[in-house]
Amino acid sequence: MHQPIAVLLFATVFAIPAKTAFIRTSGIELPTYTDPCKRNDKDFSGCLKKTLQYLIPKFSKEGIPQLNITTLDPYHLDEYLMHFDSAQIDGKCLFKNVNDYGLSTIRIVDVRALVEDPKRMELEVDFYMPKVISTGNFKAEGKIGEIPIMGKGFFNVSSYDVTGTWALKGDTIKLDGQRHMRIKDVGMKLDIGDMKIYATNLINGSPELSQMALSFVNQFWRVIFQVMMPFAEEAFEKITKPVLNQVFLEIPYDQLFPPSRK
Figure 1 (cartoon, rainbow, N blue to C red):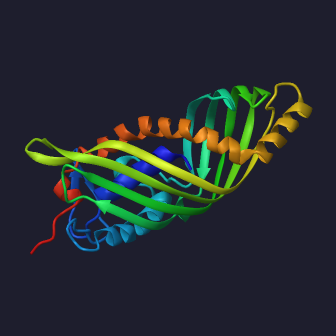
Figure 2: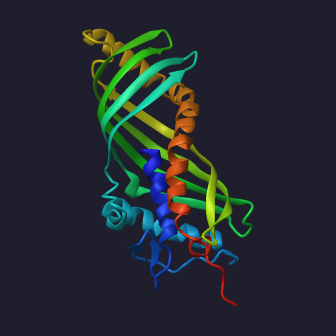
């Protein structure tokens, strides 16, 4: 799953929680689908879990035309570049024409939310997906262990039993006389039960060495995955925090998380 778009979808879910009204952001009317979750309700986290479980698969398939977001399963990404610098993996890889499949199968396992204190807001969402497939083209140079990688070709990666946690931390600021939520920290932790990797031409001009390199990657994928995660998490925060704030800073805090009426 391409992580930044998943979190954008996660943010958008909060922007459209109420069934009886519309929320305006930049003059755009967003349709609403479910009853709102009141921030000071005893089971706010449980309500949020149900809302996310209902809306994320729905928007994954249908998209959000009002925000120019098309279907997210599959999600298409033109290209992105990753750099690695460790003893086990060193180099860079450019991914192009990437398609990710599986977001619509997501199951929300648990939600932990603290949103009543405007100076300390925390949201954590645990999720599970049975299978995620990524396909596309790559161009890589560097090394994995002692194996040099210098090639370009096609890849197909299937991940099974994907579990993880989205984590957001923030506070509120005043804009035009209204409070808005500001995201200060973004994180995602992932774990994968199993992974199958296919790639062509990992080593330019040598099918035999490319197959050896591919066999090595599949045999030690878990070690490689664990080494890659810190680099992926760092890139994840840099990409997603401005995207999230673009959503949250447009919508007043009291609309995102309305209080109970007593």
